[in-house]
Amino acid sequence: MPASTPSTTPPSPGRSEVVYIPFGVPERFRVPIHEGDDPWCRKRAELWGMVGTGKGAIVLIHGPRGRGKTQMVCDVCHFVRNGLGGRKPVNTRYTTAMDLFRDIRGAFNSDTRELDLIQRYATPALLVIDEAHERGQTDFEGRVLTEIVDKRYIAMRETFIVTNETPEQAQKSLGPSIWSRMTQTGGLVEVNWVNYRAGGGK
Image (tube, rainbow, N blue to C red):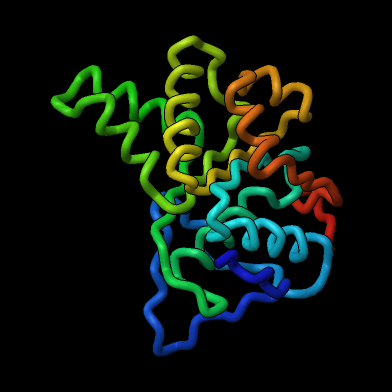
């Protein structure tokens, strides 16, 4: 059955509970923040509600720098990995686009097959690819990214792609295959309000 829409303030694990760190989430973003009922939290709840629905949503989270996109998706990874809101805990994986392609290229100089590395990103219940705008627009990267997203699409696993690009720029950089699957299953989520890094607040 589809998961129910979560509240804007997900419960925090009790002190006696084991808190699992989602794979790849950077130290800075390992503690969920910004509890409340404001646009940021409502958008986070919207994203959380897309996970575990059985639809395999592919979602583009876009907006200017400093709007809290990375913290938002890392919070969702935390909620999903720890099974908050009465859900079953499932595996998640966070990566930046540059780290993903660096990992895949490592197969060229090791005994690990490229296919095995691609499976590493194809199998988690939720995959977050952050800083998609930082990747190079090479044929190799385009092929690898399309293959990973395609495998996840077929398996109906959620994929969040995070970028500072506009939708028009992202459509061009991601390519027609990913864009088509994204508009079919998840769509776009805009994150655009005050710049927290510049000292703004909610």
